[in-house]
Amino acid sequence: VSQAHELSLRLYHQQGRADYDDSGFFASPGDTHASDTGLSNAVFVWNARLAEPWQSRVSLGSSFEKADALRNGLPTGRFRTHAQQIEWRNDLTIASAQVVSATLGTQRQRIDSDSAYEQTSRRSKHLALAYNGDLERLQVQAALRHDRHSGDIGHATTGLLGAGWRFDEQFKLIGTVS
Image (cartoon, rainbow, N blue to C red; front, top):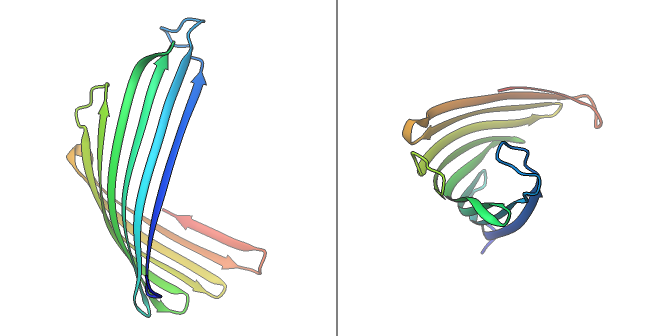
């Protein structure tokens, strides 16, 4: 659109079929088993340089997945899942090769299946903060993320600390804890 704004659309579709053996309790030696799968994904992205040190990115995505299990050509299981996601990420360059990031997002998932589920949909929200610094030989990374899920799943907070020491162009010592 301009030097400060970029729009993109990514589309993806995949189909597959897997034939396999089953040695389960109800299997017979002559049985044939197959799984037909499909995945479609669409993501719209807006990248914007809102100011010299500030890069912002908004992404809207939707995915659909199907899986059908077959035994001897007859259906034995059907799954359809649909997910919608929106995410807003902001990167702020605070010094040369040092970036602080903040991300806010939400996702909604639904399943339709011939198997019985107590819940057929859920929603999650997340907030993440991160720092990445490349200080010549020393590289540092710190991140914190909080997820809140609907229903009885609850919430979780996770973190990561990492560092790398560059001895030369070929060797670097890396350590992380999360």
